[in-house]
Image: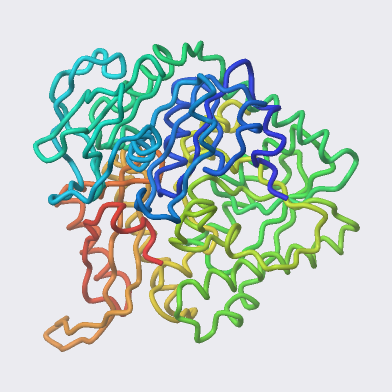
Length: 521
């Protein structure tokens, strides 16, 4: 059971809720995040949610997301047509505007010129664009577009190649945009969403992280009762915040188990133990490095690695649970980006996360609780501060559950892990020395499977290439590569080559997300 799913989430609603109907795009949860940034509670539901369910939630607004389908295809996803008769304001985004257009009798066609990426949009008078300059850069991602407006609708924005970049019917409270206001690349995108929420839906902004924390703690208490709880603690931001939340909710009923799978960064296992042991909660460290490496021996496919690590995590937890008696609940620090990339609903699988798509079919616990499942990374940090966690834990450098296994391309050996640990430690040290650790959201090294010819000490070498990866992002759904000064990159490269054996080349990854993911595997 996922703790934070649509069912039962009415506990988190206050007086006002906005529903996002999901049509399968990759930015859908990002819309929810932007809405919550505006202090309005938001929940994502499947596109085919019944109108009865929607009416029962009494939302102040509905947002249709983008999606990969062609709206004129017979099998394309469509919402219940009764949604348009509820009298609730609707904002359609990308695929959402096209579906709205067809539903009201308009026409959509395959445009002769596609629009992808940053595009200049011209805005006409509309309450949706109140306070926004008449020309602005927006993020487009479409081939199809509205060719004939539905009756009663007017175009409120256009580009050189798209005459209906936005439309509205004020009498029906129907609004649509062909671009994506939720992504950072759209100038004033948050302001557009704010206008929809406050000027069209009459939001009052009554949802805060304090409310979330209080309600989550109360709900966990109610769910767990007097049962025992096991927490998968990695020492990262997500599991640390989950630990704090569960500790406040169930106290001594919680046991935190830290599995050192031998895939941690340099000295990290000891650092995690020091941070949590003897800190008022039950803490157990399990050194399982040999067990994990044995299972991963000879495996080079990244999805297989993730699946193996996910299952082995669960098996270790089960074994430890038996040592401490019957355990009813397993808690994981799963967050929104994990769920999205692992594929949910009609969304594509980008990569399986060890605590989502990597879970085995059978798990020997009554239920799995995921209290952070609806939160993005920055929201998790806010929750951590709300719960009183120290800054050094809240702002800890993100580290994936599978650890260094997905930062080694190809098969994993102890020798390769040692190379990666040393190079990663050097990079982190030099980023900190340059005072950039507060500006770059994630940074690490990758041991590629590439060997190349080099020359060291007048002798030929044939050794591995290390890739340096650093990104800036607020939500980890999209990211830009960090513009690290050349002199800092020079120090990182020189130290790695001079201090780490079997490395003769260092490269810098300058790819954004998308098209790449932040991790290499």
